[in-house]
Length: 115
Length: 109
Image (cartoon, rainbow over all chains, first blue to last red; front, top):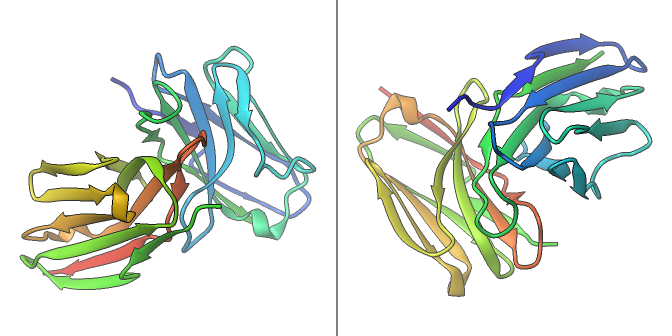
């Protein structure tokens, strides 16, 4: 099966600019996750979708970050305006189901550098 | 929230050596997964192992849920094993995985 697709792979912007990342999960995977991974740290969940509904966005900085999964398939994560501390890799993952038995498959990530 | 500690933080091995990576967690979990992040940043799921022991080639993992730890064994290490190994857990009642701080493994030829 095709993996989790993400784009762009790399993005460099100046602070206060905006950026958007796109993710297409594995076909049939109902649950989609966006993680932020800062250099030297483990991934941290930003938002989790089940189909097109939000399950958990408690760690999403909502004053500048937004995400949507309108048709329950692909998803977009937006940052506006970007800050220096947003420099990180943004990882998208999907799983067939949520909860105890979910096994996550990750995309290659989108590396953001904010200057 | 749940605490997930991995040890050692860094490990350097000669090719062919064996190693054990440890993951300790502070609360009951219903799901535990081990991931390998290669030098290009790709995270690959190695094991889904909430309890018991599993083996896949040169890798094996054991989780003792009652004592709140998991171990990842790498035998006959190869340079391609280099990267960061993450343990991730799902706390009982939670919706999503929480990642540990990782163990960075470097295998030298």
